[in-house]
Every structure is written in structure tokens, then in C-alpha cells.
Amino acid sequence: PLVSRSRTAGFIQVISVSAPGGEGLRPTVGAGGAEPVPAIDAPSAREGLAAQLLARGHAELPGLTFATGSATLSEGRYDSLAELAGFLTENPGASVVLVGHTDATGSLESNIAISRQRAQSVRDRLVSAHGIAASRLGAEGMGYLAPRDTNLTEEGRTRNRRVEAVLLTLD
Image (cartoon, rainbow, N blue to C red; front, top):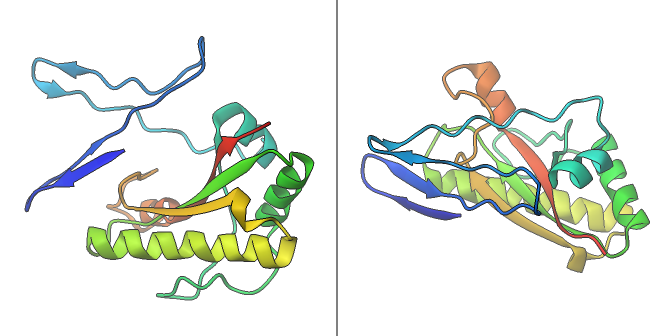
């Protein structure tokens, strides 16, 4: 993505590539400017993480908790990390990038920093607790640039705070 901003607005250009016959986001521009891009629905809880990665190319890692105001992943077992580690173990040619997301509270710079640090914390846990090679895992932060829901309600802000795994390679 290409991101730019002015004092009063932020702009994001996203190019989506999909396999022939596959579906990708196709934003359109009309005479009056850019038309809104439909929101991406949250993955169904009924689908397993592996199925989401294979079908959509990305999957949210639910249930992760971080210390308040911190990027440190709280101690404990996380089923979503165990499931991702299992997928990566079963697919030794696969690699993913972990992408942190925040709500829109605070500056863009601080949100990108904390989201990247949280993704890094998840990456570190996959390496240390699950034995996944660090070379197969990336960590990036999007801050509030890819909201899943409105930032006008606490419920929406909570949904926007997440870490996702994005499938990069699958051999």
C-alpha cells in the first residue's frame, strides 16, 4: 500500500492482486471521486485458521491479549497461535507476515509503532514457544489504516484492535 497524508486527511492506495478467476477488492473511481470500498467481513468463527489462510490469504488471530498500553503479549496459551504453528509445521514451505492493527485513538505514527511491536511480540512467541523459524515470519504494523469496524464506538474500536496472519508463500 501507498500511504500519504496532509494536516487534515490521510490517503491510502491499495492494490489487490488475485489469481485468475479469483476475487479481489476492486475500488472504482467515478466522476465525483473515489467510491467507498465495501468493508471486508470478519472471518467466520466456524472456519478454521488454516481454511481462512488458504481461502482468503489472511486470518485474524483471535484471543490475543496485551498488557494495557503495552506491546507485550500476555502470558498463557493461545489457541490461535497453536493453530497457526500447526499450519506452518504441516506446510514447511509456507511463510506469513503478522500484521498488527489498532483503533483510531492517538496519532498515526504511535499507532503504527504499537501495532508493529505487537505483531513482533506475536512473532517472538511463535518462535520461542512453538519452534517456528523466525525466517518464516514477518511482523508489520498498519495502525488504524485498515479498520474492520467503526472507531466511533467502543465495540468497533475493540474489533479494530487485532493481529492477523497474511499468507505470503505456500510451496
